[in-house]
Length: 221
Image (cartoon, rainbow, N blue to C red; front, side):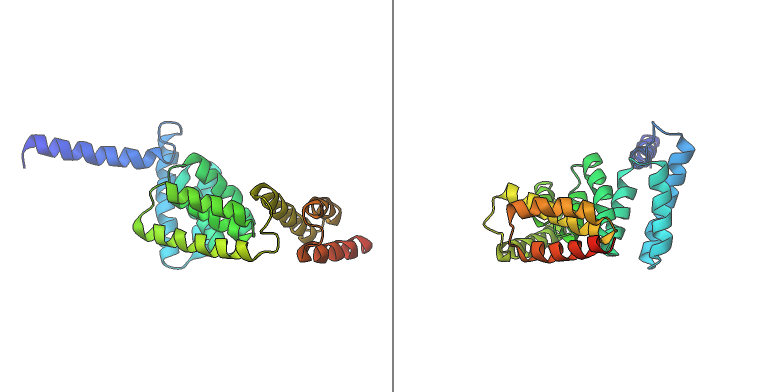
């Protein structure tokens, strides 16, 4: 191998290493912090491959706490939360991942999954469509199309499917937050969101059910 070729390969290797480190804040944060974060990220991925979700989550949270703008740990943590059913928490993390790494189809896909998990179906549909626009791999494209199909079928079967997209999204959001605040013990706040939902579809079955549950919770306070 010629000296020139060796130098070229070393330069390429160095560039690839720096490119990876840039995603962890290289150039903005002290290099030892960046390298430690990258090492922990690799350890988290290894833990996930072995099924040790708890260890992986601990490592990913440590990275995100130190370097909140690192897109790869954000995405990995958001995906972990979705896969363990913690959709509400995942939304905030994956929304940030989408903002930081907008061209990454995986970020928008998993953001869609978190929204779908909280039944914000129209917003989930929009996230999946954004993922499709960002040139996903053929395998991911199939997965996104599958989720889109499920969401579209569910939406078409809903009793409020005749609403405009804007009204339907407002209705979904209001219902979601009414349920959320009721579950965490704030029935008065839940009632405020329920009233928003009632102005859009007053006789919806979920609205009527939530209304009774909120009345009961308020009577017990």
